[in-house]
Amino acid sequence: MADMTQKRIDKLEVGDSVWNVKTNSPSKVESVIRRSYVEEDLVRVNFIGGSTTVTRLHPFYTQRGPVLAIDLKNNDVLISQDGNELPMISSERLAANGRHVYDLILDFNLAMTNRIFGADGLKMPDLFLIETLHSKSGFGKILTPSISKALPEEYQTSFPK
Image (tube, rainbow, N blue to C red; front, top):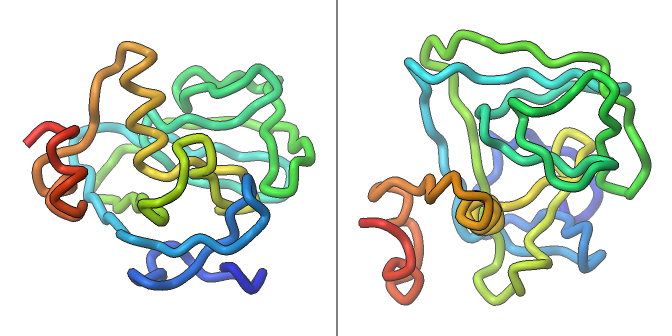
């Protein structure tokens, strides 16, 4: 949270503020997107100090730069929300079984390079930035029509309907 308290991502609401690790200031949450996965496997990433569960194509900030969850190696070093290095312990695939994953969209006025917040102790990109990383890496867009409807109309034209 922007006041440096902890709040689970599934408890965040539109209008809450989270700590933006790029601008070192609060950023308003514009949208909280919850997705259930039934068929696609998820990945649990275990690191010194914690763990997090994400989709296979979720990017992480590492000593090698942005790396997708499926491409993480046990010797990777993740970057914490305060810029410290957190050695990875392991990663494991999890059967989806209806598990939920949450994404945030931060303040629409933020520059793309400033769309980074702290989650589970790690530096994490918001959904806009994830979308950009996927587009540039050749993975394509991941937003579904229901997610793009959460965006203001002027942003919806740049995402698949």
